[in-house]
Length: 228
Ligand code: CDP
Ligand code: CDP
Image: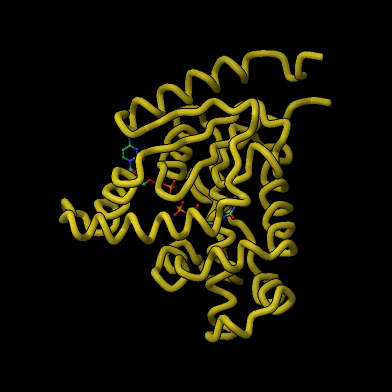
Protein backbone atom coordinates (compact mmCIF):
# COMPACT_ATOMS: atom_id res chain seq x y z
CA UNK A 1 0.00 0.00 0.00
CA UNK A 2 1.21 3.49 -0.82
CA UNK A 3 1.45 5.83 2.12
CA UNK A 4 -0.72 8.94 1.54
CA UNK A 5 0.97 12.33 1.31
CA UNK A 6 -0.42 13.42 4.60
CA UNK A 7 1.26 15.32 7.42
CA UNK A 8 -0.87 14.57 10.51
CA UNK A 9 -0.60 16.85 13.54
CA UNK A 10 -2.49 15.84 16.69
CA UNK A 11 -2.57 17.07 20.27
CA UNK A 12 -4.77 18.52 23.02
CA UNK A 13 -6.61 21.85 22.91
CA UNK A 14 -4.45 24.95 22.31
CA UNK A 15 -1.27 22.92 21.86
CA UNK A 16 -0.65 24.89 18.66
CA UNK A 17 -1.95 22.38 16.10
CA UNK A 18 -3.94 24.57 13.74
CA UNK A 19 -1.70 27.58 13.45
CA UNK A 20 1.35 25.32 13.16
CA UNK A 21 -0.32 23.08 10.57
CA UNK A 22 -1.32 26.10 8.51
CA UNK A 23 2.20 27.53 8.58
CA UNK A 24 3.74 24.14 7.72
CA UNK A 25 1.31 23.82 4.81
CA UNK A 26 2.34 27.24 3.50
CA UNK A 27 6.04 26.34 3.76
CA UNK A 28 5.49 23.10 1.87
CA UNK A 29 2.95 24.44 -0.62
CA UNK A 30 0.29 22.00 0.63
CA UNK A 31 -3.30 22.50 1.69
CA UNK A 32 -4.35 22.58 5.33
CA UNK A 33 -7.38 20.83 6.80
CA UNK A 34 -8.48 21.50 10.41
CA UNK A 35 -10.60 18.48 11.38
CA UNK A 36 -11.77 20.27 14.53
CA UNK A 37 -13.43 22.88 12.30
CA UNK A 38 -15.86 20.18 11.10
CA UNK A 39 -16.75 19.10 14.64
CA UNK A 40 -17.26 22.76 15.44
CA UNK A 41 -19.33 23.36 12.29
CA UNK A 42 -21.55 20.35 13.09
CA UNK A 43 -22.02 21.80 16.58
CA UNK A 44 -22.92 25.26 15.20
CA UNK A 45 -25.47 23.69 12.84
CA UNK A 46 -26.95 21.59 15.67
CA UNK A 47 -27.27 24.68 17.91
CA UNK A 48 -29.16 26.53 15.19
CA UNK A 49 -31.56 23.66 14.63
CA UNK A 50 -32.10 22.92 18.35
CA UNK A 51 -30.65 25.34 20.93
CA UNK A 52 -31.40 22.87 23.73
CA UNK A 53 -28.44 20.49 23.55
CA UNK A 54 -30.04 17.98 25.94
CA UNK A 55 -32.49 17.17 23.13
CA UNK A 56 -29.77 16.35 20.60
CA UNK A 57 -29.52 12.85 19.27
CA UNK A 58 -26.90 11.42 16.97
CA UNK A 59 -29.44 11.42 14.13
CA UNK A 60 -30.53 15.04 14.71
CA UNK A 61 -26.95 16.34 14.82
CA UNK A 62 -26.04 14.38 11.71
CA UNK A 63 -29.09 15.76 9.88
CA UNK A 64 -28.18 19.34 10.88
CA UNK A 65 -24.57 18.78 9.75
CA UNK A 66 -25.39 17.08 6.46
CA UNK A 67 -25.29 20.27 4.29
CA UNK A 68 -21.83 21.22 5.62
CA UNK A 69 -18.93 20.82 3.24
CA UNK A 70 -15.30 21.89 3.16
CA UNK A 71 -14.38 24.62 0.68
CA UNK A 72 -10.72 25.20 -0.19
CA UNK A 73 -9.46 28.65 0.79
CA UNK A 74 -6.06 30.16 0.15
CA UNK A 75 -4.34 27.62 2.41
CA UNK A 76 -6.99 26.24 4.76
CA UNK A 77 -10.30 24.59 3.92
CA UNK A 78 -13.27 26.38 5.50
CA UNK A 79 -16.50 24.65 6.55
CA UNK A 80 -19.48 26.08 4.68
CA UNK A 81 -23.17 25.60 5.42
CA UNK A 82 -24.70 26.13 2.02
CA UNK A 83 -23.16 29.46 0.91
CA UNK A 84 -22.24 30.57 4.40
CA UNK A 85 -18.61 30.37 5.53
CA UNK A 86 -18.76 29.16 9.15
CA UNK A 87 -15.06 29.75 9.92
CA UNK A 88 -15.78 32.72 12.20
CA UNK A 89 -18.90 31.54 14.09
CA UNK A 90 -17.38 28.18 15.00
CA UNK A 91 -14.74 29.82 17.24
CA UNK A 92 -17.40 31.19 19.62
CA UNK A 93 -17.91 30.18 23.25
CA UNK A 94 -21.22 28.40 22.68
CA UNK A 95 -19.73 26.08 20.07
CA UNK A 96 -16.61 25.44 22.16
CA UNK A 97 -18.64 24.42 25.20
CA UNK A 98 -20.80 21.95 23.23
CA UNK A 99 -18.35 20.52 20.71
CA UNK A 100 -17.05 17.64 22.85
CA UNK A 101 -20.62 16.33 23.22
CA UNK A 102 -20.98 16.22 19.43
CA UNK A 103 -17.51 14.68 19.02
CA UNK A 104 -18.61 11.70 21.17
CA UNK A 105 -21.12 10.61 18.53
CA UNK A 106 -19.74 7.77 16.40
CA UNK A 107 -21.84 8.71 13.35
CA UNK A 108 -20.52 12.28 13.51
CA UNK A 109 -16.95 10.98 13.78
CA UNK A 110 -17.49 8.80 10.72
CA UNK A 111 -18.95 11.79 8.82
CA UNK A 112 -15.96 14.02 9.72
CA UNK A 113 -13.48 11.30 8.85
CA UNK A 114 -14.98 10.78 5.39
CA UNK A 115 -14.89 14.51 4.62
CA UNK A 116 -11.30 14.86 5.78
CA UNK A 117 -10.17 11.77 3.88
CA UNK A 118 -11.83 13.10 0.72
CA UNK A 119 -9.69 16.27 0.84
CA UNK A 120 -6.54 14.14 0.72
CA UNK A 121 -7.57 12.35 -2.46
CA UNK A 122 -5.22 13.56 -5.14
CA UNK A 123 -3.99 16.48 -2.96
CA UNK A 124 -1.28 16.25 -0.34
CA UNK A 125 -2.50 17.85 2.91
CA UNK A 126 -1.39 18.93 6.34
CA UNK A 127 -4.21 17.96 8.70
CA UNK A 128 -4.66 18.61 12.41
CA UNK A 129 -6.93 17.20 15.09
CA UNK A 130 -6.94 14.55 17.79
CA UNK A 131 -6.91 11.28 15.86
CA UNK A 132 -5.50 12.14 12.43
CA UNK A 133 -2.44 9.91 12.87
CA UNK A 134 -4.45 7.05 14.37
CA UNK A 135 -8.07 6.57 13.22
CA UNK A 136 -8.17 8.76 10.11
CA UNK A 137 -4.77 8.43 8.42
CA UNK A 138 -3.00 5.48 10.06
CA UNK A 139 -0.63 5.39 7.06
CA UNK A 140 0.17 9.13 7.06
CA UNK A 141 3.68 9.85 5.83
CA UNK A 142 4.44 12.18 8.76
CA UNK A 143 2.89 12.13 12.24
CA UNK A 144 3.46 14.69 14.96
CA UNK A 145 1.91 14.92 18.42
CA UNK A 146 2.14 18.38 19.98
CA UNK A 147 1.95 18.94 23.72
CA UNK A 148 2.57 21.93 25.98
CA UNK A 149 2.20 22.75 29.63
CA UNK A 150 -1.48 23.59 30.44
CA UNK A 151 -0.64 27.04 31.85
CA UNK A 152 1.25 27.93 28.68
CA UNK A 153 -1.57 26.58 26.47
CA UNK A 154 -4.10 28.66 28.41
CA UNK A 155 -1.91 31.76 28.18
CA UNK A 156 -1.53 31.36 24.41
CA UNK A 157 -5.23 30.76 23.84
CA UNK A 158 -6.02 33.98 25.78
CA UNK A 159 -3.43 36.04 23.92
CA UNK A 160 -4.98 34.75 20.69
CA UNK A 161 -8.52 35.61 21.86
CA UNK A 162 -7.92 38.87 23.77
CA UNK A 163 -4.98 40.27 21.79
CA UNK A 164 -3.30 41.34 25.03
CA UNK A 165 -1.30 39.85 27.90
CA UNK A 166 -3.78 37.99 30.15
CA UNK A 167 -3.91 38.29 33.93
CA UNK A 168 -3.11 35.35 36.21
CA UNK A 169 -6.75 34.83 37.24
CA UNK A 170 -7.81 34.74 33.60
CA UNK A 171 -5.15 32.14 32.85
CA UNK A 172 -6.20 30.02 35.82
CA UNK A 173 -9.85 30.01 34.62
CA UNK A 174 -8.74 29.09 31.10
CA UNK A 175 -6.59 26.22 32.45
CA UNK A 176 -9.78 24.84 34.03
CA UNK A 177 -11.74 25.16 30.80
CA UNK A 178 -8.98 23.52 28.74
CA UNK A 179 -8.40 20.65 31.15
CA UNK A 180 -12.14 19.95 31.31
CA UNK A 181 -12.33 19.75 27.53
CA UNK A 182 -9.16 17.62 27.42
CA UNK A 183 -10.84 15.18 29.84
CA UNK A 184 -13.96 14.96 27.63
CA UNK A 185 -11.78 14.46 24.53
CA UNK A 186 -9.42 12.00 26.17
CA UNK A 187 -10.73 8.88 24.43
CA UNK A 188 -10.10 10.28 20.95
CA UNK A 189 -6.89 12.19 21.66
CA UNK A 190 -4.28 9.62 20.81
CA UNK A 191 -0.60 9.74 20.05
CA UNK A 192 0.20 7.23 17.30
CA UNK A 193 3.03 4.85 18.20
CA UNK A 194 4.98 6.19 15.19
CA UNK A 195 4.30 9.88 15.89
CA UNK A 196 7.07 12.30 16.82
CA UNK A 197 6.27 13.96 20.16
CA UNK A 198 7.08 17.67 20.32
CA UNK A 199 6.71 19.58 23.59
CA UNK A 200 6.27 23.20 22.50
CA UNK A 201 6.24 24.77 25.98
CA UNK A 202 9.66 26.35 25.48
CA UNK A 203 9.63 26.58 21.69
CA UNK A 204 8.67 29.51 19.54
CA UNK A 205 6.09 28.79 16.92
CA UNK A 206 8.76 29.26 14.27
CA UNK A 207 10.94 26.61 15.90
CA UNK A 208 8.16 24.03 15.99
CA UNK A 209 7.24 24.80 12.38
CA UNK A 210 10.88 24.33 11.32
CA UNK A 211 11.07 20.95 13.04
CA UNK A 212 7.93 19.68 11.38
CA UNK A 213 8.91 21.06 7.98
CA UNK A 214 12.26 19.26 8.28
CA UNK A 215 10.52 16.00 9.23
CA UNK A 216 8.09 16.41 6.37
CA UNK A 217 10.74 17.23 3.77
CA UNK A 218 12.69 14.11 4.74
CA UNK A 219 9.62 11.88 4.77
CA UNK A 220 8.01 13.24 1.61
CA UNK A 221 11.26 12.67 -0.27
CA UNK A 222 11.57 9.14 1.10
CA UNK A 223 9.92 5.86 0.11
CA UNK A 224 6.12 5.89 -0.17
CA UNK A 225 5.87 2.41 1.30
CA UNK A 226 6.41 1.51 4.93
CA UNK A 227 9.41 -0.72 5.65
CA UNK A 228 8.21 -4.34 5.62
O1 CDP B 1 -8.44 24.34 18.71
P1 CDP B 1 -8.86 23.41 19.80
O2 CDP B 1 -7.78 22.42 20.11
O3 CDP B 1 -9.38 24.11 20.99
O4 CDP B 1 -10.08 22.55 19.29
P2 CDP B 1 -10.34 21.98 17.84
O5 CDP B 1 -9.15 21.32 17.28
O6 CDP B 1 -10.99 23.05 17.05
O7 CDP B 1 -11.39 20.83 18.18
C1 CDP B 1 -12.64 21.13 18.76
C2 CDP B 1 -13.23 19.85 19.34
O8 CDP B 1 -13.49 18.92 18.29
C3 CDP B 1 -12.33 19.11 20.32
O9 CDP B 1 -12.48 19.60 21.64
C4 CDP B 1 -12.84 17.67 20.17
O10 CDP B 1 -14.00 17.45 20.95
C5 CDP B 1 -13.24 17.59 18.71
N1 CDP B 1 -12.27 16.97 17.83
C6 CDP B 1 -12.19 15.60 17.80
O11 CDP B 1 -12.88 14.92 18.56
N2 CDP B 1 -11.37 14.97 16.92
C7 CDP B 1 -10.60 15.68 16.08
N3 CDP B 1 -9.83 15.04 15.21
C8 CDP B 1 -10.65 17.09 16.10
C9 CDP B 1 -11.47 17.71 17.01
O1 CDP C 1 -5.13 24.26 17.16
P1 CDP C 1 -4.78 24.37 18.61
O2 CDP C 1 -5.96 24.59 19.47
O3 CDP C 1 -3.96 23.20 19.08
O4 CDP C 1 -3.85 25.63 18.81
P2 CDP C 1 -3.66 26.97 17.94
O5 CDP C 1 -4.93 27.70 17.89
O6 CDP C 1 -2.97 26.65 16.68
O7 CDP C 1 -2.58 27.72 18.84
C1 CDP C 1 -2.91 28.48 19.95
C2 CDP C 1 -2.03 29.73 19.99
O8 CDP C 1 -0.72 29.38 20.45
C3 CDP C 1 -1.85 30.40 18.63
O9 CDP C 1 -2.12 31.78 18.77
C4 CDP C 1 -0.39 30.17 18.31
O10 CDP C 1 0.17 31.20 17.55
C5 CDP C 1 0.23 30.13 19.70
N1 CDP C 1 1.58 29.56 19.87
C6 CDP C 1 1.92 28.31 19.43
O11 CDP C 1 1.09 27.63 18.81
N2 CDP C 1 3.19 27.80 19.63
C7 CDP C 1 4.11 28.51 20.27
N3 CDP C 1 5.32 27.98 20.46
C8 CDP C 1 3.78 29.77 20.74
C9 CDP C 1 2.52 30.28 20.54
